[in-house]
Image 1: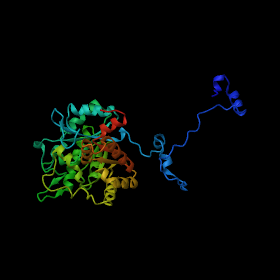
Image 2: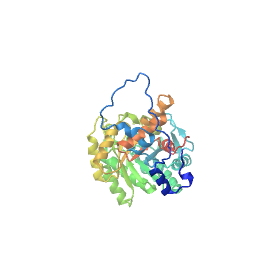
Image 3: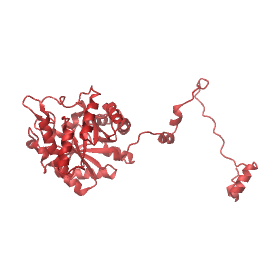
Image 4: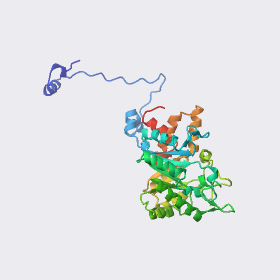
Amino acid sequence: MVHLKKLGLNDAECEAAVVAGNVPEAPPVPPRPAAPAGTPAVPSLPLSRRPRRNRKSPAMRASFQETSISPANFVYPLFIHEGEEDTPIGAMPGCYRLGWRHGLVEEVAKARDVGVNSIVLFPKVPDALKSSTGDEAYNDNGLVPRAMRLLKDKYPDLVIYTDVALDPYSSDGHDGIVREDGVIMNDETVYQLCKQAVSQARAGADVVSPSDMMDGRIGAIRKALDAEGFQHVSIMSYTAKYASSFYGPFREALESNPRFGDKKTYQMNPANYREALVEAHEDESEGADILLVKPGLPYLDIIRLLRDKTPLPIAAYQVSGEYSMIKAGGVLKMIDEERVMMESLTCLRRAGADIILTYFALQAARCLCGEKR
């Protein structure tokens, strides 16, 4: 083999040598790989387009990947309680009720280390503080406001989402005030939710997130926030929150199951599609900044529907039941937990979600960062 450069030739001399026919040798063209014995000899199909060409190597697949995902896309839901110790949640392996003074701060630090800088807080409220009207929801020195003030003092740039709903604070376990005949009172509940949202904003919430599904609450909350000088606080509306069977582990975590009945008079029917457009139109017109779909993976069609119909950011909530199914499948060795986790999150992004509320936030971010813990 002739190495022209090593003979001390400059560029012009190298080019002249090639023109003169003194072409340097290169490795030979590799032979075509042999087919297995017995493979039939057939003529090539007359195809003008073969999509597999763009999938033939890892580098090419990466070049043409349409959907990306990063830790910045995650909002990490965290359960907190008044205790000092972190208490495991049986139905949600790997999740805990975190002590707000220590465990919460430590978990947020772990998340920030791998690029997750957005969280949403869910409190387990002592039964003694629950009431039929959920007044503890707007106690400025309640569990959530205290936790927020602590976190904002330590991590000023942390983005904190809060849950606006009465169910953690209600002795009835419903998202609203319950009349004696079992009817959920809409307007009276909205009045309470406005006070709750203002209290959360006062404590440092960046985004208040009404999950109650009462009619008219977005406009009322926006008006209440603005009246108190919180024009900068965003509203993420649980726009299409379905009356789903996937919420069970979450309700165990907060011990917030309804004392009677169900939530079908305010949460949406899982069979309905167009109704999501009605809710989205109302929330957008009332001043929502972000629209959320809950649950996530079973409702990819709704995520795509809203993505195509509104310019607002879309959030998806990968709920406790989705999380626990993947965890259970992994424990039983029926699936590859990490691969299924990442595929499910990618699917939510592909459907149109800008952000994903997921209990996998820390685990998935570590995976994206190449860490194994």
